[in-house]
Image (tube, rainbow over all chains, first blue to last red; front, side):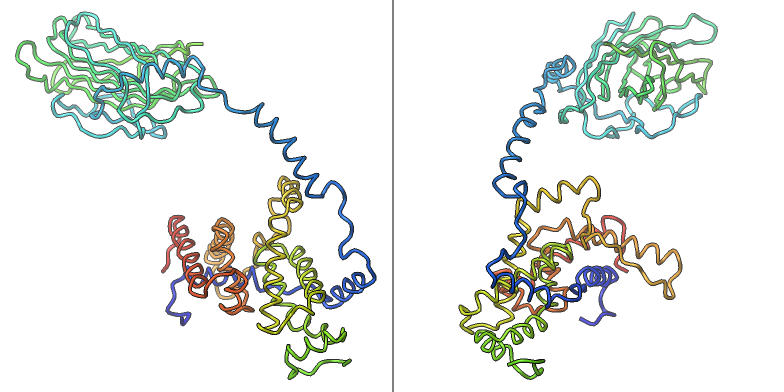
Length: 292
Length: 202
């Protein structure tokens, strides 16, 4: 094949192979061969006697003696850690829908506080979690004042293999403070326990005092860092619905995606958004704790 | 027969003389085939030092077994088959594995030719182009090491410039068509991986 008709990669491969293979033997090969033949003819060994530690029998014995105990000693233990047991038990209910919230990636910088894109609950973006394959989680929710249906649980149907860093659980408390004008804020608290590095979701619909029906969707993924801080990826959709009408309160729906570093034990206001169409103010506070 | 052998003396004639005890004739056979033997061993082992050692062993074995050579094939083909078997035996040997394992922490491949970094002549290239080309050559060598052995052997033997496809087929104990397919497949695999790494075939 003419060289000019070939692609660049073909030419580079040729060049690499040539540079690897166009090597000549060291000068004197003929002499070295003659010397070996002479030694052979004299009855001497063609090659210098191997030291005993390079004989195949010894080498094979060494391999067996070294590798077998190493295998026995360092064989991975079965999944018997508390976190693994907890997750394994939780995976039985991995049928909760979680296909409508997108989370920020781990590398996504925290978005600035302030008003966010609002979207009605019924029109929330339907996208997959950018964390990739959903994994197990353990969750619990508390919605004071609510008396509606609650759906919470595992994230997704596809169970990914357990990550090697699942050694601790992280408890997360999210407090959503919803205030209209100068009135008393209505607070809603969601608690969940999620294994380190794993994803947890909560979907809630309920009736809230003074606000009627609300819908809350939360997806979190905490990651315990070597520094002791927790890197939290949080996606939140909060959509109050006008009481009795079933109509979403368009100007109060909240959709947020946040990635933030959190000190364990210290509550942090991760978002504080003002509604553009009213004097409503929504504050989201997060507190995380590492469960030993 | 003594002295330098004329170039027009065939290998078979030299073999006949060597069988009769003419060491000079065998020396001429060594001289004629040293590069092909060395590069075949190099393709299997990757190490010039080991290839040199295996080449010596192959020639000594050929000398000892010369009386069994019937001339049914070319001497060179027969010699290369011996070389390849020796090289594969070396490649599979436990002692070699131990030696490589012992040196792995110090230097992943020692004097392995697969790791030798070619000095790219600057020529008319810009520094950026030269750097990219150097990096590309490094990546290609690394990827060649990761090829399945059957593909890698065929590719490297075909790239020695010393062996015909027939000879390679004899060494690898595979039909010529299979050898050609392996070479082409090796190139396809390499290009696919290079493209995945962002190199363009433009």
